[in-house]
Image (spheres, rainbow, N blue to C red):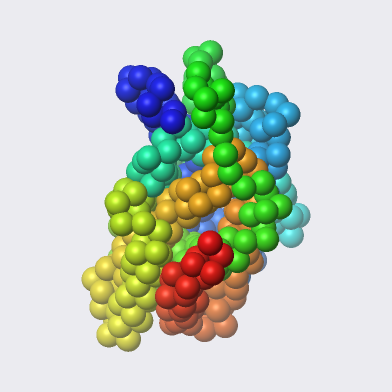
Amino acid sequence: MAEDRVGKGRLAAIAAEGIVANLLLGTLFIWSVMRNPLLELFPQWSEGMLSIVFGFHNLFTSAGILLGGFLASRISSRRIFLLLGILVFLGLGGFTLLPVDRPGLSYAMVIVLFWLFAAVGIGLGISAVQSTTIPWFPRHSGLISGALYMALGVSSVLLAALAEVLLPAFGVQTTMLVFGAIVLIVVLLILLDRRSILPPRADAGEARAPLTGFAPGKMLRSPVFWLLILWNVSLRSAGLTLLDHAASMSVAFGGTAIVAMLISPANGLGSLTIGMTMDRVGTRAVLRFSAGLMLAAGALLLLGDRMDHYPLLLAGLLLGGLAYGGSSSSYSASVKNIFGPRYYAKNFGISNIAMGCAALIESVSGFLVDAGGGSYTAVLWMVLLLSLPAIACSLAWGRVARDAA
């Protein structure tokens, strides 16, 4: 096992490197803070149009993760990581070129910049970091996966706070350029360490203990895989819906955008604690717990909406963030634990079709706000209803896993 063959100091360095790298990958979650400034800059746009941009960026992030999984056998993870920096810089920096007097052209440019460049770049980065870090920790996959996803949550709230400072001074276009430059600079600094972004391997004991696992084709034929996918699509769709609307929803209920972005550290806390719990109690218990959390979040959100009570709404957002974070870290760790480390880079990429499916579902939410005349009630019902398939999958998990064994 890698944890037995590598010194604790080196393992700590590998984990720290992955966490620092993941601090870059929450960049796209600043979209929630950028929504209102973009609507002010382009009043011809609508909430639905912005939800399409955010929702489908997740589809292209998923494509980037899949691409990274298949590139891993052809080029080094260092080069994949460099592609992250270049593509995100071009994608976010390109916002400075949007012609304000041509909103239709600007919207088309945003789609290209945010999807094909920034989102694909982030996907490549997620693939490089996750697939090269988690296999080093076979006995603590949930913990390390949780730590990596926690870094995503922490980074998004830090970057959102920075955006709140930059936006009044520079405007939304230049602020996006600054974030693109930050990503590129940190990527280059990480790559200055010649030992950084190491590929997964069985290390010195490979001859005695070769890596094992399901090939992608065999994984795709497993009913356990599809049950896990459906569970994750359900919770990821609900979580993305909350992340997309957290800032604007908070403002609509009398709160502030930056307070609502506490959903991101809640996401990170859920990633760490639920991922670590999975190492102790197993997959089935964590599937049920995360699904139950999202169901409770949906109920609190609807109660807060009905009573026009902001604290209840905020509590629902935070609980939803915990559930979403837990579903992310336990999902990636479960793919490694169930289907093995040998093909993990490819299997992790393929499994992220869940992210693409969730993106398609979440993109409906903005149109629900438009149809409701600015009301978020339909969106909150959407969160509650999306948690129900996850509940069903978690209840069916034991029987399906036994039948597949």
